[in-house]
Length: 291
Image 1 (tube, rainbow, N blue to C red):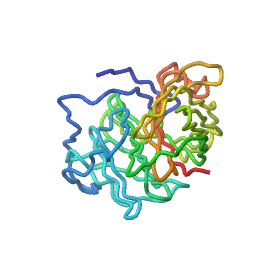
Image 2 (cartoon, rainbow, N blue to C red):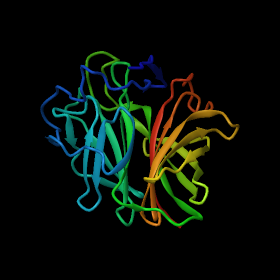
Image 3 (cartoon, rainbow, N blue to C red):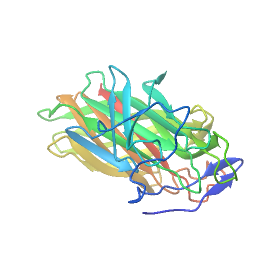
Image 4 (cartoon, one colour):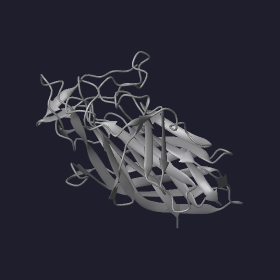
């Protein structure tokens, strides 16, 4: 399990990503008011999927707006029902916190118009010098086009490993933090003749509501399309500096939709986050229909 030190930046807690631990098993020990309840099962990825970060599984039903998540320290059960969501652009926003002393998890989820793919990103802002975050992209159905280029465009949403205080607990490091969100636009271009995917995420800003400070454009390159419609590649800054990765799945008849995850590592903010000193992390998703 990789762990990184935490920073306090202008009143915002900044902690770096850690992987799921064997002793935690994705289960919290808190109880009391504010819980949206839990369930056993239901978070397993669908037919074809990608999972990054600390999320072990997540599923989203766009019709009923039911979000089930399995991630460390978010509740009493291994899988949690994140309750009632609130529309936020093309995505639905959820939050989960058992009590004011427990970690505050934010989540965004969406399905494509035809229901063939879905995406989920979830993260807490940090507590006790660590944060837990990750994302999934799930495919419900897929038939590949005969060939040619297909374009996809729409909104992107992400979560950072720092934000604002969201609770009250003894001592500075124990105070739960709610992640700042990142808003932007995504453009994906897939060549099904050559089996190659590239694209970008641009007009990126972060803040309590996803607006405020501008972040650099992220360029997505070097992804190969597999037979099941999945792909993975590199995330770079415009200066060809590698700062993470992206993965995803195509869905629908003739690749009518795409869902993808983005995981950004140290340096992606290119100095836009004051005091980050290389500890910034971001998980995000895009769920897009073809143009």
